[in-house]
Structures are given as C-alpha cells and as structure tokens.
Image 1 (cartoon, rainbow, N blue to C red):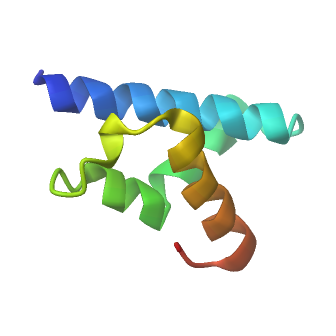
Image 2 (cartoon, helix red, strand yellow):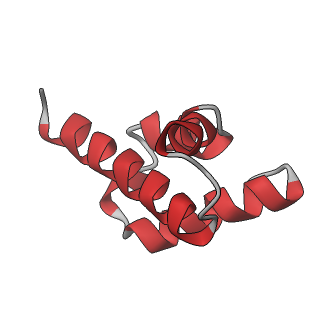
Amino acid sequence: MSEHEQMILDMVKNLAALLTEENPTLSAEQALSLVINSDTYQRLLNTNTRLYYQSPRYVYSFLDNELKTGSVK
C-alpha cells in the first residue's frame, strides 16, 4: 500500500469518527457509508487534489457542508 493510499484510509477513518462524534446516533457503519458515498470522498480519492494531506477537521468541513446542503463547496 502506498503512502497516499494509507493517508486516504486514515482520513476516511477520521471522518467517520468525527461524524459519530457530531451525531452520536450514527453507528460506525452508517458513518463510513456516508463518507464513502460522498462527493468529498471522491475528491479525497483524486490524488491531484492532495486533500488527504489536509487535517481531518478541514476535510470534515467539506463533508459536513455536503451533507447539510447536498453539494461540496
């Protein structure tokens, strides 16, 4: 596994943890599903964005906005 692949996996784990922290009624599986099915995740997978180098809270702000509004900004 490459370094950036490991960083992406860590980011997904952190995003799911932040989701469950903000929404205690979500299970870990539900949180992971929300992350993996998001446009934010697709941007995270795009190595050209280098989004995986950012802090989890910064990336979470995109995910949170997407979940609230339906679009990534």
